[in-house]
Image (cartoon, rainbow, N blue to C red; front, side, top):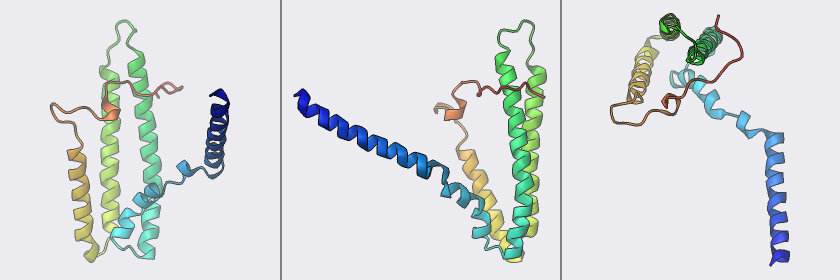
Length: 168
């Protein structure tokens, strides 16, 4: 029995090693066509011209950078907040106000970004743009947790990941 099992295990290990080598070389997890497609979703759906696509890219790069910056600050402040459980006489009010302010800045940035994108649109593209934004808002509302439903994976009562830098 042992002599028959050994070649089978050896074949399985060789196959697994081949899969791991393939993943290291090709890195299929880094080729995310969906993410690239999402970035170009508006430009594709609205049939942007070359000039409009360039204008969109010019708007998108600083927007994306600013959103990443705000997300980083929010994570740092949440980390600080959740590390403070053991601190005596700690009041979370000031930290939660800062987090709320940062979240408000994110919402304002998203609004202003889409307002600028809307300004790129021609008359024919305005109605489809407004419909896409309306659908996106409704989709976001449907994902909000309802009474009696289980929380989303990010909201399961776990504190956010820890960063190595204190909040600024």
